[in-house]
Length: 304
Image (cartoon, rainbow, N blue to C red; front, top):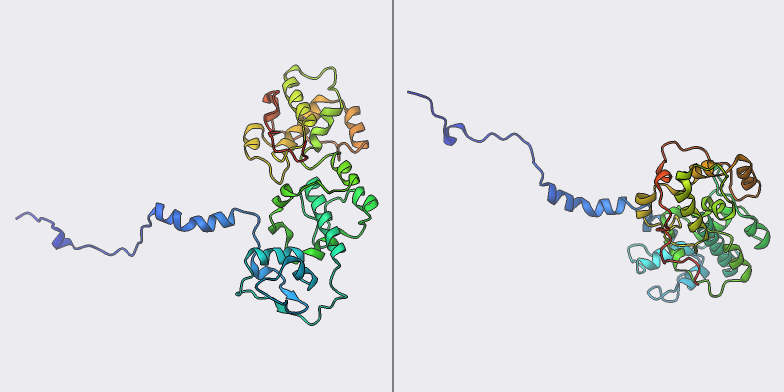
């Protein structure tokens, strides 16, 4: 008689394997991925919650009261954003005294220093002395009298790695009460526009290839347009990378192709450019750029 296998006869083996549901797994991972994908975000465990003494009312303590008690400004902002969490209470530190707490004037100058660096260079000052530090504009050192090391200003208002503190706050600062000297300096340029600068100041060389005319016209249009948050590196529209590629590297190639060596040397000597661009062979988007300015948008940095 022929052998006939039946479920009852074979049984069901246990392979010890768990097969995941891809959809449900993605849902479980989403919050973790959202958090890890962001460069910013400060843990309450990372902030310095020490104060000179307990505030009169910990449940209603203000930002100003916290900094006068010795808490650093950025740390205090994070703690207040967390709604004064009881899981991370303020800590009394008797070594903090009125003499060791920075004055509100020094704090204000430090905040301005940081703001200026973010707006003009799109990076926080170094929190500690390092070799890879941002170049400090002479305006801060000579005009504003802020000649201390950049870490002095940063460490005065922040105890953690400042890169975790979302720099997009600069977009929402009002210029209405700024001093004229500062406004005039901002008018010389903000982050994201340095490589566009030459196109608004120089004509291209006489023998520039004709196919570069649209790219040159685009770069000139952007250089003369009002500074935009869509172009600023801290708030740049991600669609720009898709449409135009890496702006700085493409503009560097275009500078090499559109201007003479003598013009470029003059740009460097006049500090219009930091240095002569390096050729970036893999960045060729500029060869197909159209002339229309489709990146400035309406988000002006400086109100009309």
